[in-house]
Length: 541
Image (tube, rainbow, N blue to C red; front, side, top):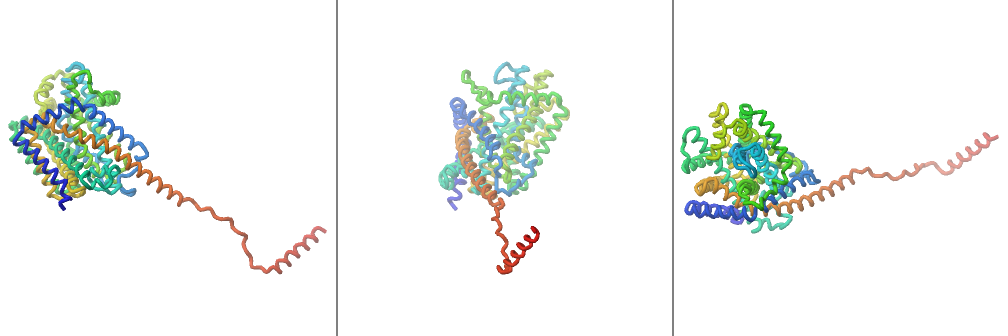
């Protein structure tokens, strides 16, 4: 029993240490996070960019190659969830809450301070959408898809535990059940805890800002702590209902609210400009994808790349174990090709549509209509960007309330999926973890969210998250190799099985039939032959 709880107790102990440091030595924690972030940006930025591109290339390769027909499960398994529900759960468990937070703030920030060129210009508006699409495009979803497809293959096809250590079975064999595998699971759990706590911290700051904007609720740590506690009680209560219950319904509610908000802003906003921005952005993104993906600015200070591109790519890597584990859990029965198409390209189009409607509208108001006050408001307080933007649309109060409800629901579903995954890994891959384990992790996530906000707000959240990206990226690179070996062996097994089935299905060649034997006596046959000869003689005469 103690061996089964090793991962849980070890990761719990480290999490409690982080919480204690945050409470009793917040300044030291903030300084350590910032120095770690600076070291990563200055020395390992190239590693993060290169790793993310490798993840994307690997996902496309296995999706388009002969491996694409391998099913994530037995050959007769079929998907548990309808495609629409599946996609809704993808968004709810991953970047939904972040889309709401950054939908307006990020494009406007790039417009004000672009990666190159002059701000507040037509060119900077175009560049802003181009880099938004980079940060939220296929590179992000490839990180999730890599972990998801690898874990789903080994979990459902090879019948290994639902822990990320199982992915390394082709490399280390049964060592995944020993200290090596448990060490990997502890690292993954810590990454998930910090990642989800960071995202929930962003959501809390935005909810607090919205409450201040609408009802003059004070902005401060006390208010933010109350928001986290209340929402934590809701998501802990919902997670005990199980995956089929709360998560499915909340994910569908998420998608409904998101479509309503998106549709209203599209209808009230500059609809024609939004469509132009959407298509222009996709074209610029596709044309400059390679260049942007490897841009490191070696001859400059690289501050913009460090603050944005490396931050986002580190964010996606740090979040990959969480989202990938959850995506694997809901993807049983799909083929690898179907999985890759659904987990990478469909969510990307949804993200592009969101930024085109929200960010594209804001840029149109600022650049074309001269509403520079909106840009100034975003620059002054990034957490209130969405609510300031709604002031330029009809029904601004209703839109603000709808956005806050959407953030809270995304808040709950993100934490719900995180607690579920943490429970699975803590209990050595148990697909249905106990309620007690999920409740413990729910409380830990809430506590770390409060600590991160106390130790530095957005800067502290950003530092803590990206610092976890390097060890996870190393694990994911080995994951590519291990998954390739596993898929190659499975393809050989399938080919051999198909060859045997074809051999069995071939019609067997029948032997030539022997002349039919007769039971007529030889004497009678001689008489018949003699009579036939006499008849021929008579005929000739």
